[in-house]
Length: 339
Image 1 (cartoon, rainbow, N blue to C red):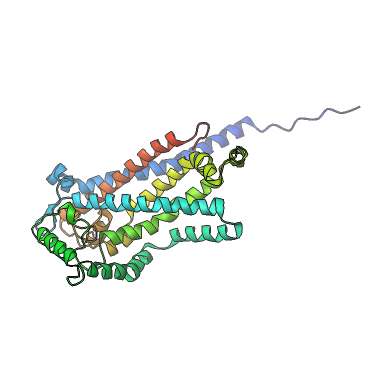
Image 2: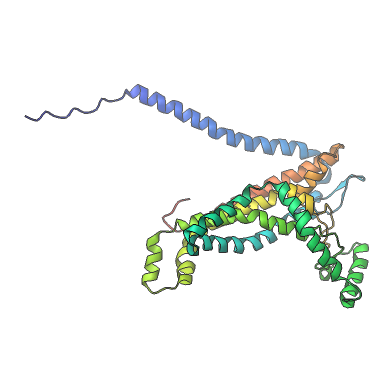
């Protein structure tokens, strides 16, 4: 005679409910810390920014004069510099990152893909100061030599004449667009160098995320395209990239966030000048670089408050970028997939 199987002993309902309750409270407290830090950050930045906002109002964001000696502060130049360096660096790095991700995930043999992938990820671990020193000692001399030969009077008289005209306009405080790509000196430092080093710094973020997302594309999707007679490029362009576009966009936004907030490397190479788009090769400034260069020397209340207002602006800008990115990613995500 077969004896019936005894059911496993039941846990006490009191123990189960009390344990769940404690766990729920702990998780709630831990999650609340993140929200609390966010709220306190906004509160503290807004509190320190209030003197500048009270004195200048919206003119702080619409004027370009930044003169601590005369207590005049306007953030237009820094805001434009931040957006320009970030967007241009992103536009250059995204094609390179996607190409490297496709090579590692789809083309390279395994013995080569792993080392290349590791090297790409290693770029993200390099400290900012190292990138800044690399830019100053390796890239800046190359740009300096090119800028000096650009307006060489003997070899390029037309360029020298253009440089002379632009120099006169710059001296009068004018920044015409026809002079935007004319070098204003031979130092090598400036907006262009900041964009170059930012491109190198943010490339591994997009590349790493794109590589992982491409590898997660179901193999059945690839095989179905090959079964229809598709070429390698058709499989990538019609089966892999459309499926992985939401994840790739997430990596792009991650890189944009890094570019917007990058401080030390940009501060070392951009030149710290508040000239609004004087020259693509000339000195400029971003909000992060001004904070790094001037916060320690900002002794007066209004100067210190204006610098903190730049931090508040950068904080709000980062939040808006991430919010818009979340909307874009949601719309790009294929149906049936939750991120």
